[in-house]
Length: 372
Image (cartoon, rainbow, N blue to C red; front, side, top):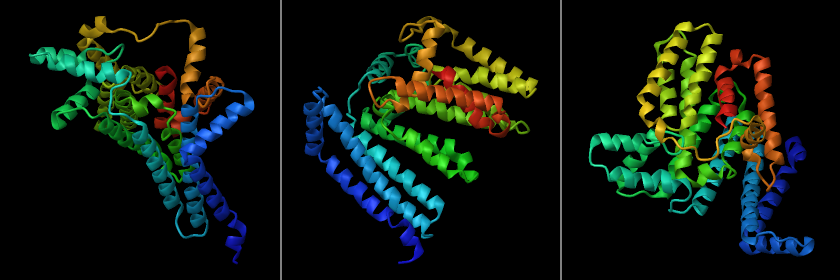
């Protein structure tokens, strides 16, 4: 046996072990038996169906990990390149995410899909003039404009003569993959693939329930971030006329969901810090024109929850929401901790002047806390 297999011989039995354990746990009867055993042993009252689903999810992650281990062994042996290992790992993760979304999604409007899709279509189709149809498109849903997602919904309805929510979930998965590629482009170009895999692990998992199983949420949230990526990228082209596309993408983000408006103050402050006065003025005028054009809809804005300026609520809500990808239990301790870590990273990036080295990543990071 050569030195390679002597040093890495543990990867093969580890992969087999992970695969077999995943297969065992994936069996529904075994998952329910485990939950019942835990309830009896510790006198708990865990919901069997909910916890068995969680065990099934862990089971497929174990199977995924077994294939990643095998691919890593091939990379270490020189059979494949590191880029190939990254491609395999991310591709299998996307397949894993898609499997769970489609396996658990239902072709039925739940939560915001009822108001954001079905109620909107009923209202839109009941209008008989172009002006009233435009008014229905621009009517705020709670506190947000959703013109671009609504145009997509109408296009889908016109093409297929129906709204199939499963198809919308598939489109959102594709949008999430596209967003992942945008976020990782700098990492891939600079041989920082490990960060790309970390981003993939955070994006393609079911903790983000709303965007996975509520179609309108995915259409809004994913595309706001996609437009933000493009806006911040074009913002860096100070010597090119393409820089004027940046405020256009910011307008698109604002017309996708209300939080897109935050791109304007963030970009204006960034331009002022760079002493790009003329562009800052253009952004300011664009924002003024944009708000003036939509001023007639302001009176129709209704906040989904209680609006408060109490800083103590921000202290709990902002880090908690930033860390929701780590909501594994019924408590907020882990999400709060991860949220504070994200805020610390942003403060560190400001102190270390990362906006000079990686301006797009810095601006996206600056977008997250006020976005919550």
